[in-house]
Image 1 (spheres, rainbow, N blue to C red):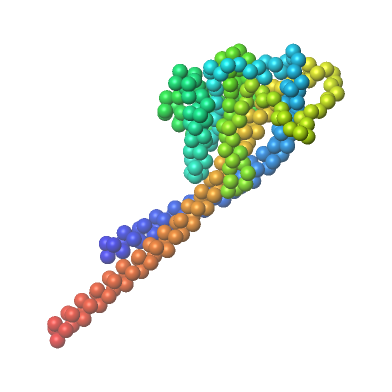
Image 2 (tube, rainbow, N blue to C red):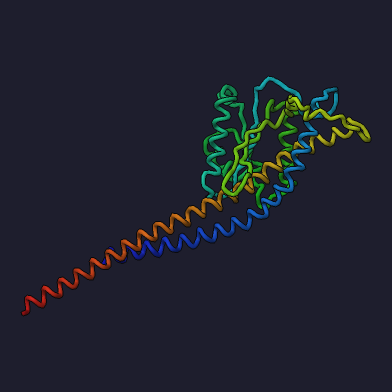
Length: 292
């Protein structure tokens, strides 16, 4: 009977866990709808702005954008890493950490050995992970998701832009999960600064002759910083939507796993109960025969 109590307790525990994972899945689904709407509306605007930025940068000249497109020997590196604040979202955060470590090993190992690689953590999980492992970490901008806002993301982007112009960093990269759908996140490792030149293609995709009003210099002065700020904000929105999608998928799988475990536990419970009843009947029969 002790075994029966133990199995029954496990059944109750797994049932409670299953109810929690179902509720968390529903919460993640509700948050995902809002986050998906935000990134869907932002993405076309951000992509068009980036295209304009690359086209302007390709035209050269001594203008304001040169401070953000200056290519220097890479001695000091800043990597902006976007993760979530919370866990229970499968491999969402661990994939980011693996991508960052791989990116450093393949591209910045020499700089890392000299202590010249710095992490700008966006998200509590990024802050905790890199601080615990004694990386050079900037922890002033990690709180971006409660709630997500353009104003908060601007602070992080302005820090990176200002330090790049000052020469504190020669390269700034951005690592985050891009939202594709509920079940799929695409790992992105992008060069943030210096601004990348346009891609060379046969269709001259970026070769556009703009008409400037009031003047090219004034437009560029506002457009380049704005585009860079939008790029960080888009990465945060992408990561936010991808996080809820990953959590929704993880909780759905956890609910299914709990259901399978419940089937096994109930089968074990019924078998154990049947064995106990059979044993009691045999004992009664044996006692009756002894009295007879």
